[in-house]
Image (cartoon, rainbow, N blue to C red; front, side, top):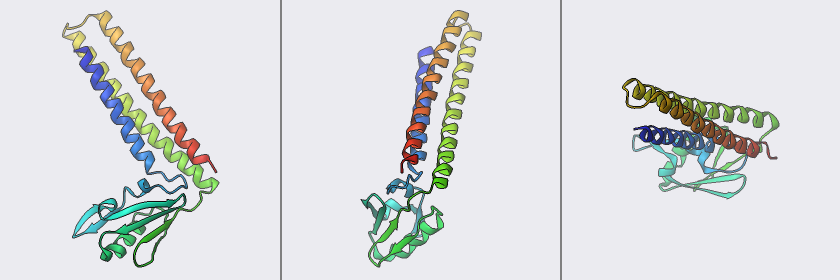
Length: 185
């Protein structure tokens, strides 16, 4: 039963890492990255559809993203969706594809984005701490049901804490890496 608790705890930590990486991929670092457009939804036949499902997204160079819709009639809709998403980009429509020039980040914008990265990291840490709390309460329940001894409970809680410390350290290293990437000029 204890192994199931540790396994579930580890799965929760992995989910927190994945969610953090997904959120950080959306934070623009001043380089072209198609992941910054993940939140853009285009109305396609009356349904909100992710941009990457109605167009081909590419990064021809470090400062530009090109969007080539599969249907030419979608150009205006895609352009409107990008402007509505309020990502700070100005799409240029040339009649066949949309170009987005990624502006270089100012020092002030870099600091804002670093703060945003920190917020995402804190959310991941909260998720990890909640998983720790749940694991500890399951161990407490096992002990109160007399399925484990008090010594096993203390060893179990120590193992849960060690796993949590390792998870928080991994989150810190992910955040540090992203911040380093942001502060590069």
